[in-house]
Image 1: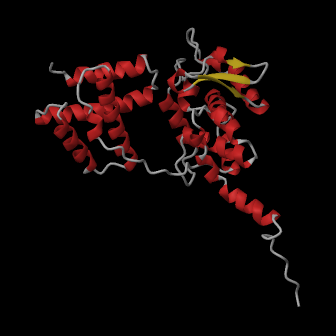
Image 2 (image 1 turned 90 degrees about the vertical axis):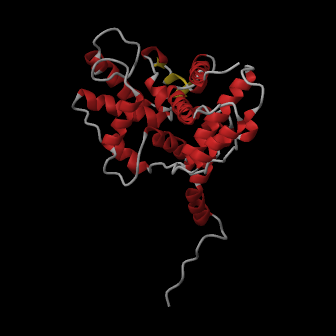
Image 3 (image 1 turned 180 degrees about the vertical axis):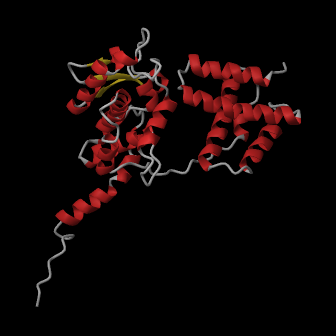
Length: 301
């Protein structure tokens, strides 16, 4: 049986979308990566189920000037695709044995200091509708540590105003509850009572709306963060606020497993990377507190 590569890619993406509940961002990345493989095979008229052709493609992308993270993702996309084909008996040979499993370079996530967070929170003007909305978005991202996709997916009914909780749906549609502090609830209430009704054009479940009254997009939120951090000496994204949330919790003495639960991480090893970020704080505490580290004041002669 001769397989149609393009059709199989479409089937695979639909499988990830409807049966595995992959996020829109992940689906776009997988689709883009696999369509690159399709174009490569089509241009060279290659059988994509031939192990030599698979290896030649790996060598081809390895020679490109991709960032390590991009190369790793492209290889993982290809491996996952062939695992799918083998699982559903569309191919007989396990081609994943010919695809390497490169390790991504582990980089410590960038985060903001408390002063930088306060500067960011105070940037949107509370004298206009969009400013209040933007402040509510930034407050929510920092105060809860939720992903941008989770914030975009928030509906009005997901907020429990009495208990200060928000129900969010994470990766693979996994549901969890995040806590919201009093200050954040105040700005969310301000947005809900005075801004959202004026943005609303027709019935809409989404809590955060764009200027046209529809559900705000993740791209729009990225632009909002970029707008208010253009004079920062670092690149700041919605995910930076998630990293900042976790780092500040740990620096404040929160238990790692508590942070894991709030972030919605399946494995605690994913959360452990944030422990490296607090090393400076640990060193400072040790220097100030431990008898063997405290520097004795020298007497003036």
